[in-house]
Length: 315
Image (tube, rainbow, N blue to C red):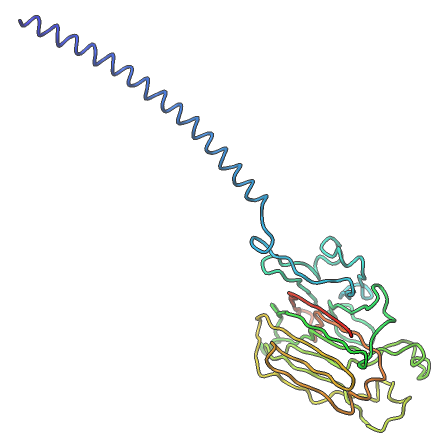
């Protein structure tokens, strides 16, 4: 009986050992299988990541500015100074000379205009990276009068700007309406270029205050010839909007019509000029300007102005 029990125990131990071996074998094969599955999982994950990266969606994963540059040229603070006109400006992201001064910020869908003191345009002591309207792409000699009307609206921000020794931010002009003489007017007053004064300058000033300055006649009874001269005009006292935009995004709208000029901030505050000066300004042709016209010559000064949208129209 004892021997029989021993045989039963021995047989049980043999079965346990044998089953243990097969259990180990099954477990090992399972691990190998899982390893292969894991390798497949890693491959699938990598492919999914690559696919996801390849399917970045504009307006969700990145943003591009929606600004039509067909009717704008840009002036840069380099060269004599340098200019890029349409149609070349349409490829601005790939133009080497522009990459430092006019480029996209895809995190917020803006065009960044960067400038610092260097080259300046004629009749100016300051540098700019600024757009100049061209009603006919590539040409400066076709412009508009107040009677013909003009409207410019843009959303922008002065995202970065240097400060002076008293820790006050420098100022920058972000929009303008500039006057222009016809060839006949130029010859009549004996000028050697077609430059006329800017009737409108809009400043970012005093750490985020928007300030508007327009031109007025020194003598309201000026002659038809003398009125064409820059010396006949001077700056008005200026208008400060109440809102402090700081470095945040804001909207400016400029509307010119016969004898009238209006500037609107954030669709909320407005200043209207409807006077003899605007009436007599009707003698000039005009063009819009927008961008970054830094009002400092300090060697270490700079500014970055972002434009999110910009549109112009005429009657």
